[in-house]
Length: 396
Image 1 (tube, rainbow, N blue to C red):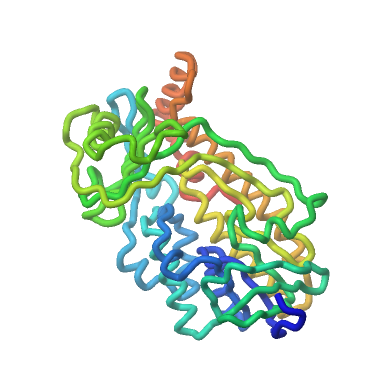
Image 2 (cartoon, rainbow, N blue to C red):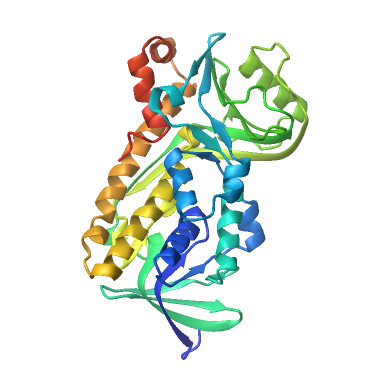
């Protein structure tokens, strides 16, 4: 960076163009608050980055309020329930009946496309391929960020800085080490995910719990399935042939009946299961959102929904500040987000232990898992409590 970079000022600088950063920019724009979005990757990369697409109803409402739900409302698949299979039996949890709200399946990459499209249409400032972002200062009255934009070295002076750049981004590292405290753990298994040109076995998600391991049937459309197998965390992604993957999925999802629809596998991904929570999600004028603040295992599909909740909360606090000059909502961001993060972690941990067979697991542990599944099947009280967590109603 040269001695005299071009000086720019903006109210809010947002690092990261994932769902949290893009939604925050959109919400701030609706409030008349100027922001700039800096993304390390190319636009093509972020729009093709496949992530979970199971949306809580509050998340759907957030995108509608932001004016970016036109395609979501047309193509999103509303789910009123899900199916749990174990020991050769199956039962359905009708969470719409139990809670009054459904879930919606709509790919995260489609959400990103919608938000980027809205940002560009409104001529909001967004830059892709910014690989040299450096947070130079986080002060009580503002922050300084240096980077190169369109070949020009720039120093951005902002009143607030939103770190939406994930676990390995520069935002987390900008909080002094003595101020940071975090918790992290990993699980002794992974998910082998495949995208296939095959209709789903069921119009709703199927969670299959077997002694061979967990399997999940999801979908991207009525003709495209997304399926997952529990595998060892160090398994090479191409170890299994397509035929072996379909055979194992059929064993776990249908008991080997051959009823699972098959087709061309167009994509594979290996997903490690891990969790992380930053105890300090804000420092002076820097706020962490989404994966920069917390990571949950994909078992309960809470990551995207928690990121959206972060964006809504911070947008509300910033709007309150610029309208009234009061920081009470901003100062409460960390405590509110942290409380919600631990609720999301607790349910994700419960789902992970409920669905997966751990290495070296005892017969007693397997029997206890079966008892928990049986309780969900027999008890409407237990099923309702589970459904409230699944759809996000019980999370603060």
